[in-house]
Image 1 (cartoon, rainbow, N blue to C red):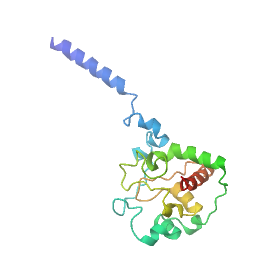
Image 2 (image 1 turned 30 degrees about the vertical axis):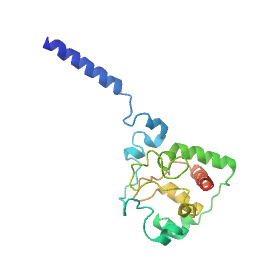
Image 3 (image 1 turned 135 degrees about the vertical axis):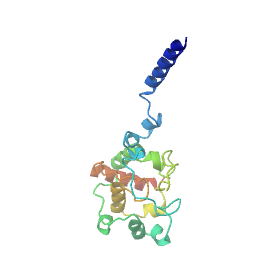
Image 4 (image 1 turned 135 degrees about the horizontal axis):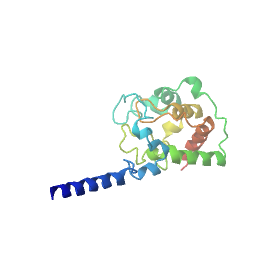
Length: 184
């Protein structure tokens, strides 16, 4: 009798494990949050920016008031070299470019920054510091070159990864889309 129950329990356990083999540990959210949530992606640590936070609960927006309100100060706070901040966007902000940027944003950024760029995406709620509000005046005050640099290299001390794997053209489309968020 004991052997029969052992066999039944073993088979039930194998069936349970077999049924779970294709399930992501994050559940259906993996499909919603795009490629960054996959194996080795951002939330798995593969693309996380490795430098530790240097401030309080919102380290990337706290500190010197000038650093948060002037383009030069914000660029310096994100380690954007002056020559990178001076680069002009070679892609005109056409409807097509903004639409392409919107698609890229939905695939790669929305999970953390939210649908309107307010920093309130579902994956960003547990992050410390929280994702930036991309519509905020101090973010929009950045030059296009500074935004491109931040998208490319990420933000040290935060979970914001660099997106250098995107083509240069796609990163400029993202810059054009980020500019459009300020008017929403």
